[in-house]
Amino acid sequence: MQDENIIIKVAVLAGYVGILFLIGILASRRIKSMSDYYVGGKNMGFWAVAFSARATGESGWLLIGLTGMGAMAGYSGYWVVAGELLGVFISWQFMAKRFKRRSDKYGAITIPDYLQSHFKSQTHTLRVIAAAVLVVFVTIYVASQMDVTGIAFDSMLGIPYEWGALIGFVIVLIYIFIGGFVAAVWSDLFQGVLMFFGLVLLPIVIWFSMDHGTGVTDGLNAIDPTLTQVMGRSESGWMNMFTILGLSMIGLGFLGSPQVYVRFMSIKSEKEIDKGKWVALIFTLLTDAAAVTIGILGRIYFTKEGQDPEAILGTGGEDVLSMVTNEFLPTVLVAIFIAIVLSAIMSTIDSLLILASSAITRDFYQKIFKPDLKDEDLTKFSRIATVIMALVALGIAILLYNLYPERKIFWVMIFGWSGIAATFCPVIILSLFWKGYSERGAIASMITGFVSVIMFKFVFSELDGIGPYFVQLDVLAPSFAMAMIIGYIVSKIYPPRPEAVKMIEEIDAAGAEDAKKSEDNSVIDSGS
Image (cartoon, rainbow, N blue to C red; front, side, top):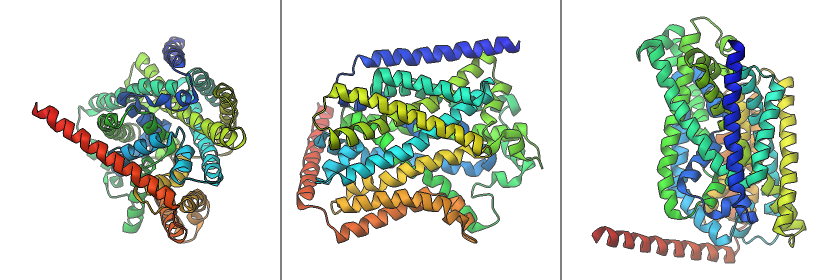
């Protein structure tokens, strides 16, 4: 029976991988230039972009990390959902159109492209810093995703960790090689649909299998009454406040992270953004809430009062998803859920590798050293860079596994996510909404965000007295704030170039005029 179950799981996974490769082959037919390879020729539809942005933004932490967080934190874990939902809404509602309009005017196909053009930079300093930070934190983030791949194969299939991480590595590289950004977005759409339905339906199945929809609060209270405290589990009000801020501020990462905003570059038009917004919001609300709920239901079902939850559910509750799927689902559906976990991981790895590859290939190699290099030669170099970075990330993942077996997956991923977000989000926000933001201010923001993430993670969290508060707050919110403040101060001291301000004013004026025409046409159409 055990052998039969393994065969079924492997067969389902083989079918899943086959679909990914087919997507890569179909996508390859659209790759005719570097713009196609990195941003899909800026011609992607709203369904694909919305699902891709959300699948990329969520990653393996949604299924392994956030379900574990729900199991360990109880009701207070829903603050992550609130924070992410707010971040996604602000990003799509107030930032996406403005960013799309400007990046199109600049002819940008990478985030460093956008920044270089926006500030009318006369040196390569900003481009080099942006590209360097991308490569560092993207490699860390990809390593955390490969780490989860190994854990998923180990806990759900019984395949040794190292082999699982290697299998995931090979799968992603093959379809990126074939189809680039288009393959990544199309596969994200397919994988996002899998994630959506799998996550939304699973807690419903568990709920009715356990108790026909009753007794969740009573069940948590029987284990530990603090699990039902929405405002935090500590007796200290200050500690609870810092915990809530730490969980909800994770949503800040959606306000300019390159792996998400390159999707806005790729979308067909600003009108598509209005449609995509609702897809992204519904996806975020339902999948994030479902993930926390799965963890909570798993905590009730598998643990009792006085037990150590990590001894049963794994470090940080990382095994709770595999435990509930094996307990409540037939083998075929368990296999599909393994594919869903891999979908969450792969959708992030492919996007991040393409992003980091573009930083090395276009922003370092072509723009600085080989400006006359042809696209076809650049594509070959890009693929080599992708392989090297993927290998480095794989090595880091295996080192993490062997050196830090007690690591908590949720927070390892959040560290990589926070590094990217704290470096780039303040820069994107200030560049979009403040004409007084200068190139030197942007450089100061990026360096401050980068350094602050490291300082808050490894220095401030170790301080006597206040250290535990910074542990709960985590690194993103304070690093984000520091980057905004320093960027503002430096820009006041060193204002932007007049020609850069004039260009921004012209783009914004043209955008306002286009929006008014579009609104007038809509009124005419509705009247007729």
